[in-house]
Image 1: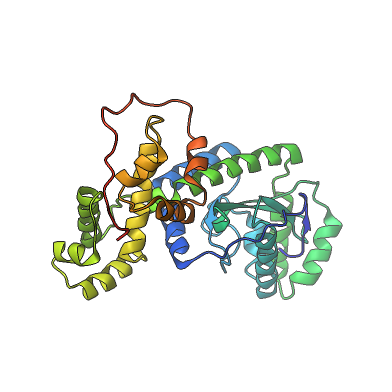
Image 2: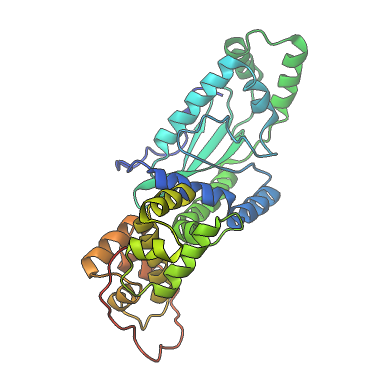
Amino acid sequence: MSGGAALQSPREAVLPVPATTNDARVLKCLQQSKLFADYREAFESVTGFPLVLRAAGSFQVPLAGSERANRFCTLMTQANKTCSACLQFQQRTEDAATVRPQTLTCAAGLSETLVPVRVGQRVLGYLQTGQVFLTRPAKNRLDRFLNTHAEGVTDAAGAEIRVAYFHTRSVKPVHYEAVVRLLEIFAEHLGSVSNQLFTSRSSREAPLVTRVRAFIAEHQEEVLHLIDVARAVSMSPCYFCKRFKRETGLTFTEYLARARIEAVKRLLQNEHVRVSEAAFAAGFQSLSQFNRVFRKVAGESPTAFRARLPRWAPRPMRSTPTRRRVTGG
């Protein structure tokens, strides 16, 4: 697939913040999560469309890994010239989808959509679907496409490609827009739970990370220094830093900040707990430090996060969290 004309309005004039190495690890957690697997199974079963969660700048062919990938597209990407053009098309789609979903149409007439999964202004990755017609397929368009992109294709392969092309699904634009809206809602949910998934326990988690997680949970409100945590897991501080970074992709300080942010989010679900109380209860030393870390990790302010919570709350806690002097790690 190559070329493309946008079907939606131009993207907003907001430049995204480049993803970090930590963001790549978070995206991997999302890709491997049960949440994404369950949604993907339900989405593909109900809509019949393929769905993948791809990293920005991925060199994989479109919708690689989905059993519902379009047969025509799969056959065409086996040709080097077409594969190169297809990757260029993917890059143009990403460039257009940094803020909101974008649907572009390739030279063969098939449409694909990328929906950004964002945390604040950072794009973690993209939900991708499509490889469908939004207008009736035309023989003359296919002929022009094959003349340009199918050099060296045998007659037998060419016949299979033509059959696959005209067996491609056609969808009314209004129905396709509804599908994209579903993905947009799911992308927002993935962005909001990304840190939670990253800091939650996995069956593949290294024993070191499990022990550190338990130590943080037990001493979260206290002053936590790296040397204390290293001693608790019977390692030298230097060796602990190297091992922990290798296992999680984060420094201990970065991991501790994310764990504390998740604790704050849980506390803020109780409307009777003030933001400042939640911050100090989770182990932050000052409100300025807390606000800075919360916005960096969650992509929004604590107030904005609380405003999005459901308008119900559990019964008031019997006592409010006690302010303690702590450090960020």
